[in-house]
Image (cartoon, rainbow over all chains, first blue to last red; front, side, top):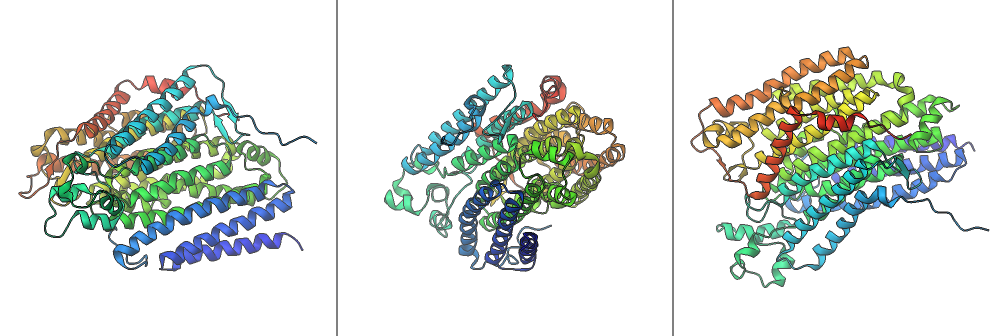
Length: 99
Length: 538
């Protein structure tokens, strides 16, 4: 099977993630959509690695995973902190700062 | 069979980065192992010694005739612009850290990590100075046996110290970003600088809800933009079979792959970087985060993040995409115009000082983009100079914002600043001088920076953009002048804010910013001379 199909799949996953970030209200779901986008990138990197015949794309996927894990730690702690004071994770309720 | 070969590491060239990141690890250990008493001073001492040592290493390297090197298998390029950016970042970090460390304006410092600690430190009804200032978290309070009555006054002014390791890690990421020669290193550096900043935004003692809201917004939007950055990296890897900027440039000269990969990758990459630099249509987080974050954090973020992000933008444009400049520059013209116009027009409508400075920074990002798009030595040196000048002005201005205080913390609403000159002529005078610098009036660094950037853009054939930039400068000058008029020609409100007398740290930070702004305006040739001869490696 042609590897191009995987590129299309990863582009689709990225688009689903991006739309999810824009339309969902719950901060945790928004965050999950961002993770989906990062994994779409991983799929792209691995596919290009296969097409190019070089290993560096696969190594980069590991870097992305590690950074995504660190991002989860920081992100969830911030969302926890705001949940404790507001009792909600909806991003629509966070509206003190505007205009 | 031979073992793996390891790339050579030039420790001399990497010294500033290694010093800062090593000290960041040491700072985490101090945080974990030292008792609360005296920790603040130890952390501040460590941070300042680190900054001084790294600055000495940068200056020693820059003044020796060591050649530009690409080290760590091409991951970092320590060349002239990288050293200039490192010097700028470390020099800007000094006043920022002093602002962060100040405990004289707000007893206990402006930071607290845990809302439970805050609730305990400010028991309802008796939120006196002693109660507000003291505690450093429930765990510590339990360990030391509770009640603030049993603690000496010295304990009360210690406050929280986790800001120091966070700032050092963020600074380490910024240094790497300024020298990153391949896109993967650039991505990791971008995250290393962003993650501590997300946390720092949410640590405010006052107005916690706004502070946490700014942290969530910055985090979600920042992670969103780094996903785009990363997809751009993946597309460029598909195009060039390498993420090294020099390799991408060579591949662009003669590759059989479709150009859509190259330019799609560049577009997504630039979106990620411009988000961090708060350029143009990617600026939406800037006003909210600048307003919600503790002001000293905003000062650090506004000055240093912009320097690091524009350093990366300059390198990507010059090294990676210099050969294809005519094909992508048209799009960036639009971005630069949007950035300048949005910053200036929305800045006019603001009623909060911190938001106003945020929109002004969006307009300034547009001006900086003019210099970055001119891929000439002149454009490079002008942009580097502008970054240095803008950074010091902004840090000092945010330092002054921390001084104007009402009953519940900083009074940032413009109406509270009415008649400030009658209350404190020195503060009003300093704000006036810095606002004039942002507006670009001669004899300030702002004028020299704008002049250098605009003439570089003119020389590279961007006349229409320079005309737009001049009009926008005039519009933006209106809202700076509005603040000045308000301070000098309005009657102060009866229940207006007080102006705190700054402690030594804040005084030094503000004085440093004002003096540098003046010196770069009067004798810019010293720094311009250094910036002039620089060129990227590769």
